[in-house]
Length: 354
Image 1: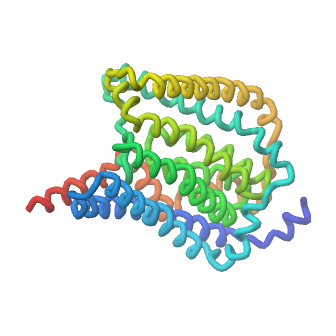
Image 2 (image 1 turned 180 degrees about the vertical axis):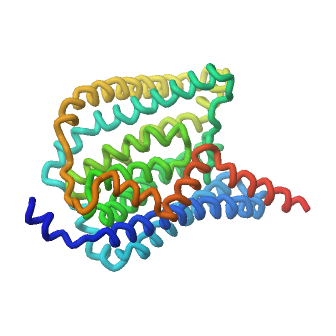
Image 3 (image 1 turned 120 degrees about the horizontal axis):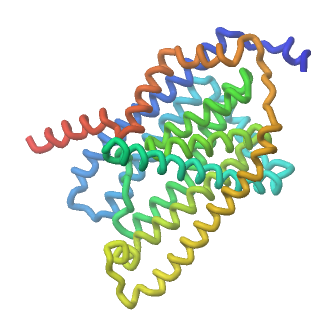
C-alpha cells in the first residue's frame, strides 16, 4: 500500500480541476432540466389537440433527451472520457464473480432506503404539525409529479423508470463520474456520487432516501468493480414503484382511490391489495436485513488511497469550487419545489396568452 501511495501521480491541481468539472456537469444537468420544462410547455401547446397518450410520449422523449442524453454526453466530454469509454463500456458492465453474493445485499439496501424514507416522512410530519407549516411541496418534475393519465402512459412511465433511468443514471454517476473521482479516494467518491444521485431526483422527500441508496450502490460498485449489480438493483427498486403506478392507472384502482368500487373491479383490486402486502412485507424484511448488517458495516472502512491532502481538505476544495457552489444552489432550488422554474413557467404561460 505504501508503494502505491508513493507512486500515486495525482496532484492537488488535478483534484481541483476534476471538482470544477464535476460541478459544471451538474450545473448543465439542472439547466437542461429547466430547458426540458420550457420545451415541454411549448410541446404541450403545439399538441394541445392531440391524444393525451401522444402528448405524454412526446414529454417522455423530451425528458430522455434533455435530462439524460445531453448531460451524460457533456459529462463524458468534459471529463475527457468520451474516447476512453469506448473501451471502458464493457468493463463497466463486467459480471462480478460473486454475483449471487452481491445481489444478496438487495434486501438490506432496499431496507436502508425505505428506513430513511420513513424517517424523512416522519420528520416532515412532525415539523409541519409543530410549526403549523404546510408539508414541503412536491418538486416540479419534467414528466409529472402525479400518476400518469391512463394505462398506456403508465407503461411509458414504467419503461422510463425501469429501463432508461437505471441504465443512464448508473452509467453517468457510478460509471463516468465515479471513475473520474476514485483516484482521489473511494470513500470520498462514494459520498459525492451519492449526493449527486440524491440531488438529481429533485424532490426533498426523495433526496434523503435516494442519497442513502446512492451510498449503498456506490459501495457495491466499489466492491464489485463494475456497475452491473447496481444497475440491476436500481431497475428492481424502480420496478416496485412502477408496478404500483401501473395499478393506479387502471380504471378500477383509480375509481377505488376516488372512493368508488364497482363489482367488475373486485379482481384487480384484490390483486392490487396482494401486491401492497408483498411490498409492505419486503419493506419490513428489508429494514430487518439492514439492521442485521449494521455491525458488519461498522467493521468495514474503505482505505484512503490518496493522502496528499486530508479528507477535510478534500471537502473544502470540492465545496469551494465555483461550479460546485452553483450546482448546490440549483440543486436546493430543485429540491424545494423548483421556484426558479415555476417563475419561468408562469412567464411563458402568460406570454402564450398574449
